[in-house]
Length: 273
Image (tube, rainbow, N blue to C red):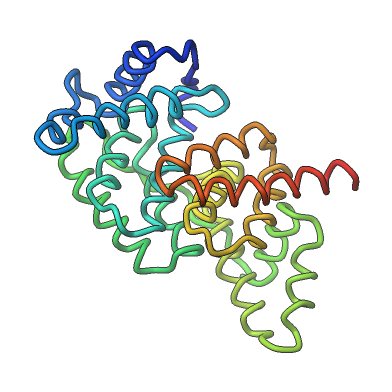
């Protein structure tokens, strides 16, 4: 990541929550006067205040993840859900404001294609293009080194093994009797093409994956796999809990609570293995 600024939580009094949230919102928005309160003043001023107090004062101010990590997690989740284009544009802009690079944002949105499909990734990239074109203050994206060459299946199997031990062999075995081609596509595309790309480290890829799977709420077994994977590539249990907790703001409490139940089981399994 390009910015190591951490968020901090202090007291929880109502006034402190609002002031703390306002400070984080100013950082993310890049504006001394963010528009969220004014935009809701005529219809739901309390929602504006709650957004600042809870979304920014309680959640984004928590320790455990940096603001760049939090913004990439939010961008990935909003792109994956596909139902909040204005908020996605705001948080792409916010990612730039807290130190994420264009390359990291683009790679995050390419990564979305694995878990939410190509339309979600394409729509996210359209939003990113508009933000990038407007941000003449941000250096143009530079090309990174190409992804490794060679056999895609072998490359994908090696990358998956790096993330999760013998998972590649288990994937092939689990699908061999019904959809062997799906197993091959998974290894070639997901891990051979996408996870092998430069631009994001494995830990960031897994953080965004946990965010997406939590927000989508439709893939508990895969969420468990990727919580394990996050821990395998250097993430901590605190970071896993933090990214899931953050999704309460963007996907709702049921999604976050269901994901925490999955995380609890993963932590228990690792403690006894």
